[in-house]
Image (tube, rainbow, N blue to C red; front, side):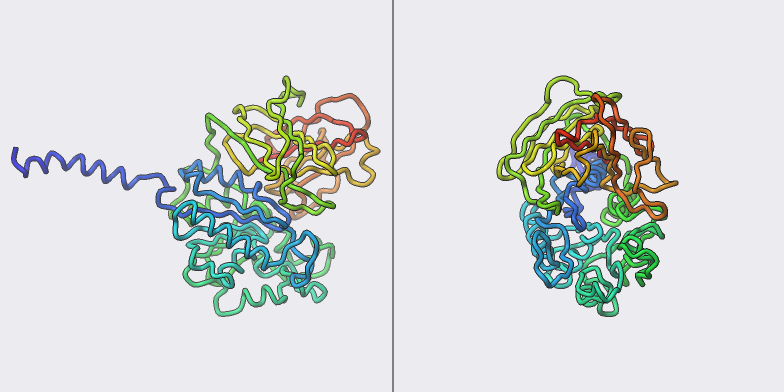
Length: 446
């Protein structure tokens, strides 16, 4: 056979191999992503966003979320405050996380995606911490980039528009850092922290002097998504589509979540010392997980998983059954026995972190304390349906969505179903008694 003929016969195979190389999964060519949570928050808020990236071909090994030790900001950035962090503290922790992700993945650069205060941390790291050499993309969702107010009495806060921290970050003709691609995502006028009125800062009617466009940056690609709230700028499906497009260079194939046949869950029990949220692990916490009836919330059999945490606070791993509703029971020293009812987990995650609750003053006299919570968004009157025991929970404000949880105090009575509904999804709880130090929570993924 002539050499020319051999090359001619090999050509179709070569073309096929070239085509296959051109259509490798997105993760093969995409940077690792480090998700950066906001003020008082936890890495757990990112698990649904990670699921969406995975559902579009991103390798789970390339998806990482920092869990800041003390996530709550100081009242004044320059003054130490117990269990709170400065901008310098946050920057140092993010730098360590980026270095570790680069080591684990062997990649030179990462993409950073931040929510709310996370935008401050990312910008500080890029401008003042040498991070620009290690970062390809920065996506700032609902960032407090121009503060939440410019009030004189809060001038020392990192969130003050005229304070020292934001003034230096925003100095110069552009508000971005050379060599890094920047995108901001904001709501049109539905973000509680980009609002001209101080109602969400406890000063209704007082001008904040911060506009709806406060999250935007000069020099960035600035995206506006109508009607979404502060947290949905980071954790909602429309925000995800913009994130994916910015990093991958094309629209995602889907914004829903592709289910996995095998679901393995893990996470930490995190401490809440003196009511201050932290991401410090709790040793000696007992976690039990029960399969429950979707209709009644009643347990189905014995605990499917039980573990007492060690020094790392890890409560798993736990192999969950697809389509099954679960009750997580956390018993941690100094806290109420916390029952968290969850809808089915479609995919695996190792950042299903748990924070035990405490009874508020006076709640112990109720028959039971039941809550509905949506950590990745707020409840909006007229936009959403949110019901607890067929009632709209009190205390959820009208107008711009600003509350992510609601609570009912129920009278004494035997265990019974208590439905919690958010839009088209219902999770059924049981009314465990407050007199025995129980708090009951229905937590929605989305």
